[in-house]
Length: 218
Image 1: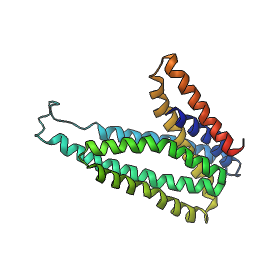
Image 2: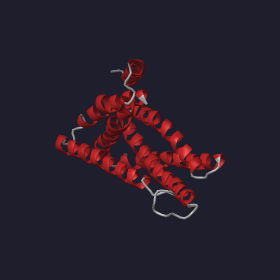
Image 3: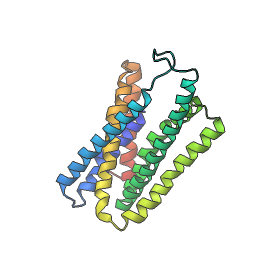
Image 4: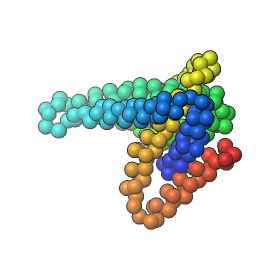
């Protein structure tokens, strides 16, 4: 988690955003895109939280026996749909980054991988709890991950013909990285307040920044 924060923030603030603003696009429009991206991710997270606050057996609402299992199954499919759409978008963002700058493409892919690995593990556990077998959960998770390839191909061939959109895609991607790091990952890290737990966090965040700086030669 700490390594992801370092990679995502440094990729956004030290590489992707400067690349977008150096493109010659209107700064006002780019900042508007950044604001729209932050609000979009806030709303998406809000929808996800509302989706998970479903009723359950024994909560005083007189649900029939088997309600929990049925609800868990539905949440499993919702996770797959949401994860598939997220991976498809990630593919487009990686393609946009590579089209702007190969180095930026590498660090953007690294930032996405750093966040997606723990996310996919969490999704796998949710699918198991929703009643999926291990093999079935693995296959569906793999199929959702492959949507990133489809998004990457679509982004590459689409954005290559509309290069003027690349700076805005980079800013939107940066808004996602910043939002996830600041509103999701860092608050979880702050719950570990002891010096013993904080020192590794700081070291791993620094390592993430160093990795990005090393890969980009900055």
